Length: 78
Ligand SMILES: [Zn+2]
Image (cartoon, rainbow, N blue to C red; front, side):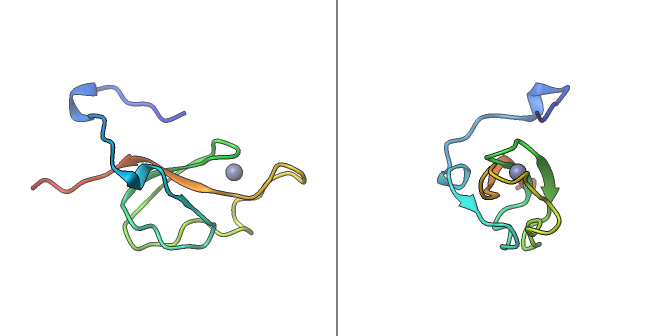
């Protein structure tokens, strides 16, 4: 599970971006931390980079397909 120390630098949001589940090998549409909705594995990725493919992040047989879901949305200072 993702951790943080200084909560004043994080806030909750209700963007629909948090609800979308992305297949392995697809483009990360937002920078941040993504979590596999099935096994809980977490990765950090830059916007436009490729989410880990099937052969990089593997599930045990029977666990189900990999689904990356945005957990923490990294935003530029604006
Ligand atoms: Zn997984």
